[in-house]
Image 1: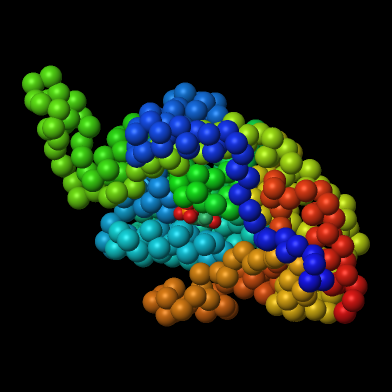
Image 2 (image 1 turned 120 degrees about the vertical axis):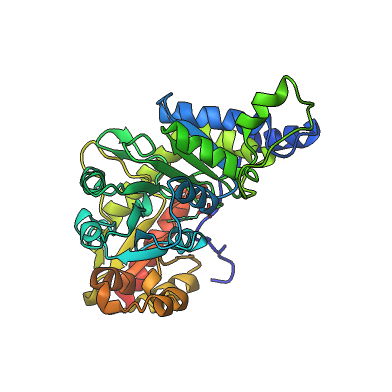
Length: 388
Ligand SMILES: *Cc1c(COP(=O)(O)O)cnc(C)c1O
């Protein structure tokens, strides 16, 4: 075993094009936000295939989600509905603005927030909802949009896992919601090291996000005076943030985006290989996309059935002994000390998410893996489950 290479849970897939573009940025003398970021934004809108959208590059999805909630006017005293089954970023951004995140339970098959759980959490303080497309499978957006419109609630999609994901034939990012935010963190379906993209069709929201992305400096005010004022002149109209994406990161993103269709094809192939290989094992397989939807397969989450006779923690330990890295997505928000104690959350309030969490394991699925690597994962899973 000691001579077997450890297969990590995730690795980025960086090619020579990305490396050369970064070198070009470094040699150009323009390392922060500039021409490459501009190009990456233009390319991103083109990828989504809807020229009415504006893409705004930021230094993380967390920053993007913060900008999005700020732009729609979330503030002190407001409530924002989020699934408990997510990464802490989805909820922490609500706290940045002094508002209250209201956690809801999820669907047992997709692990996504449902329109019913969303509806049941609405109060007269609800300002926004942040659906998360878990693992890369879209939430039931028509129903969520329907509820949100009826109650005048803003929708900010946390699409950190959902690039590219289709819902009823349309890419996530192009639906009839207020803002969608993608992540380019190191382990996501494409990466810029750190980075994110804010996408919206609403010109007012786009303008606010762009101003707040860079210190609250107003480009409008700037443009208005450029003819009469010198180049050094600018005006600050709000206490903004420092969330811009540097060209060094955008250089990576430009090429990752071009490779995204081939990444996606490989992820889909790998997912279908796992489905075939695990048919007869005591595992609950992840939900797959419905007709006209597509799954980004950012994660491959399985649940270990109780009849398997092995606890999740022990399963992960044994996989590691066989040289395979696994992970858990997610430790739900209601179990983390800060969220649990601040909002008096208990597992009984989220029976579905709690049960998913207790059985869930994420298996490695990424484009840097070879099909031989995947075979090793499959053999290890079989060995661990049949050995008990
Ligand atoms: C990764 C992730 C984020 C945060 O993305 P960053 O780009 O690292 O800020 C937000 N939400 C979910 C569901 C994520 O998985």
